[in-house]
Length: 340
Image (cartoon, rainbow, N blue to C red; front, side, top):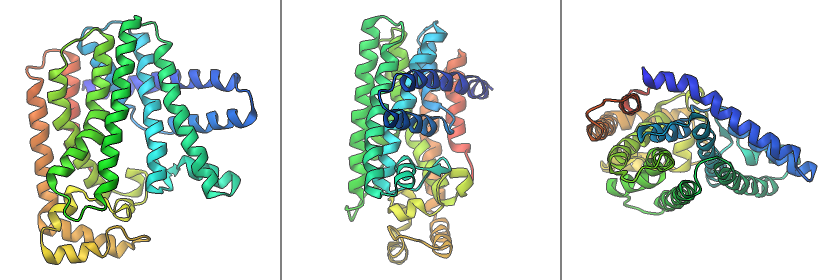
């Protein structure tokens, strides 16, 4: 499978570029505390993950005829530092303790210095630095200046759109009747544009591409499906699989499609409302929600919606006649086959 080949070959190359860049930053640090924050950013960024966004950036580049493998790998590492920037801040917003099975960045600082507020303050700074580092990596590539400029504009657009998605996500907690359509809009901006469309288009821009309609028509439905399936994993997965406590999504009060559909029944709504957003949810309460979601048909409905969206995305890239298009088809299939 082309997907497996890319997942085997490129993560290490991307991580090597990030490590090389951050080593230069550490070697030129003007103070031990600055070196410390760079080291913590490095550990946080390199601790795990499939590097899907940078790989998709490489796919977008090759899909539009790009040939310079070395430079696109370097450029693609920029989007992984954008990922760190967004996740570091997201962890603060969600008051999360774990990310990829290890302490979140603000918790690392809290443990070192024994001060929660200090930990959050340093994490905000670290996130901001990660964002700037991403721009620097992209600027240091040897692509023509006009292409780099357009790619940087797209990067800024990705961060802006993700911010809008985050607004929709955070404020959803205070919307009594948060609907399925509103949720899908949230997923479009917080996940589909950021995880798929943005990286693919950034790569395509660096290859000299102009028309990105095929990327959009593929990315938006597949990206929404990716998040729907992620929410299923968030409720039914194990801590080992999802890299955070199994009760996290419920404690955050996340209004997933699973919750929206299950709560259409008044009796279910009353039961779930007593648990959703509660701190220190017990395993018994988690199992109750899992049972309600499954028996209400919300689980089957969510999976069916994800499957339909994936099929729509695959149709947008037919006929498949290159390795890059085959990668995208296999990725779309992978989205709905992820299990817990």
